[in-house]
Amino acid sequence: MGDLKRKRGRKPKSAVAESGGGGAGTSSKAAVDECVVSPSPVETGTNGDPQSRWRGRGRPRKVGKQEEDADRDIAASPERRGHRFADHNGDITTVLSSDLRHGAELASAAAAAKAVPSMDAVVKVFCVHTEPNFSLPWQRKRQYSSSSSGFIIGGRRVLTNAHSVEHHTQVKLKKRGSDTKYLATVLSIGTECDIAMLTVNDDEFWEGVSPLEFGDLPALQDAVTVVGYPIGGYTISVTSGVVSRIEILSYVHVSTELLGLQIDAAINSGNSGGPAFNDKGKCVGIAFQSLKHEDAENIGYVIPTPVIMHFTQDYEKNGAYTGFPIIGIEWQKMENPDLRLSVGMTHNQKGVRIRRVEPTAPESNVLKPSDVILSFDGVDIANDGTVPFRHGERIGFSYLVSQKYTGDDARVKVLRKSKTLEFKIKLNAHKRLIPAHIRGKPPSYYIVAGFVFSAVSVPYLCSEYGKDYEFDAPVKLMDKLLHAMAQSIDEQLVVVSQVLVADINIGYEELVNTQVIAFNGKPVKNLKNLANMVEACKEEYLKFDLDYDQIVVLQTKNAKAATSDILAMHCIPSAMSDDLKA
Image 1 (tube, rainbow, N blue to C red):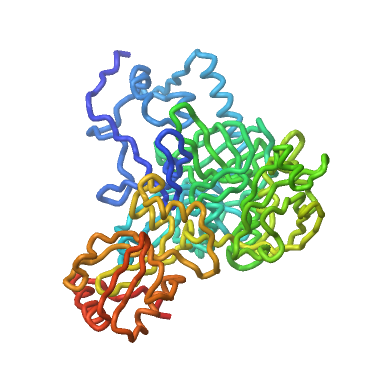
Image 2 (cartoon, rainbow, N blue to C red; image 1 turned 30 degrees about the vertical axis):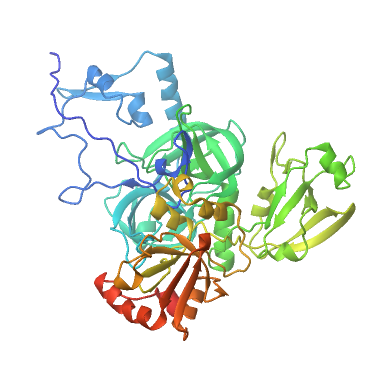
């Protein structure tokens, strides 16, 4: 056979991953980035089908060994790395590398195929998102499409990542080897654990598919296989690796800390929501994020089965997702011997010191600052805040708390003024002054005389200052985000988001994201409280006390009269969001 002629043409563009949103800001050098594993954008042609990766005319060009080497920068699945098939005049020639490492990859791929007999239960998730516009809260952003992965479990349900279907308008599922997309219904979204539960009403979808079974929490160095629909192709993809670390991780989606697995299998955009299998073919986790760092490669993270089972059992028990409870304290390590002596700890006593107690937490009635927590539910806590986990392993004691459900009771043993006391506390979800999410609800706002008032949340900060809001947002707002505690369940941080310029507000145009402290001398508890006070005001002036000792004063009659004209000018349908009208 003669030599193959290579055609010159444009190299296919690599797909760009988009963030699922809601993630905490990260530094440029080291970041656990949800962008890497967020749903991959869907490209469609004029007929609505995915566009071809090759742009040449006529039949697909023939691939030879030289072209294989030239295309190594294109993302390849394990099968593509393992072998190539080239069609020469009807003969199929297998191109194999003689390199021993290449042979090892083939053996690994074969082992993965044997370990994953339930790949038919892995589905592709298509979602249309319409995100709220937190900077202009009376409207929404332009919709966009994404694709990710999911898998079928018992009870006619499908699991995927929460960020894969966040702010969904429409969700569709497609089974492996099928050309049909089925409309799905979102049953529950667990924002803290980044898990969502879906179902499909069409009986045809469930035919011929067996649900996946869950396995136990794997040990270090156990083999894992991640299955999903990442970028680089349109068919199912399989990558293999081992469990390299088990610890409490920061879940980027809403910055919560739960148990997680670190693996060395590649997790790319589109893998989100796909299952991770053990060597027995049972699901041991859900792929959800990876580490981006100039010195790190192939570091992915998986939501383990204890977190998954907590989510599913919470839904089955309560008919809705109620969240992961916390013990509402900030604590300090007791590793310094002088510190331990100063609080009356004996040589064999260990624990952590309470720095602050959340005023809204149920345990605020019994736990006090400077108490030393010795044990939680009968498990002794070490001076570094860890508890025994498995043989040769320790883990943060927050793991014990995360195993509980909202409303559960727990026994806590504390040392107070050299006396040992035991309390029964009730666990509840965390109430933050600046919440990490608003659970899919539209943002709240109130407008008077062109002043736009909003409640601050992490999505709001992301909208105003981008993903690097930690560096760009005002210092006072960041200080409240990191350290302030809500004094009541309904407390919010209210700010003047912006001023819609008009004659009535001359001189106040430069006010941006400044906290409202009080209105006419009365403290502002939340946005609804402010709106009610302004609407009911009968005094001659509206006076807003702002942060940095600034004030805004407007004549009440003129301010309210000008509001309707300003709303009409900016095509704003209402002076307040629907939740404030109730």
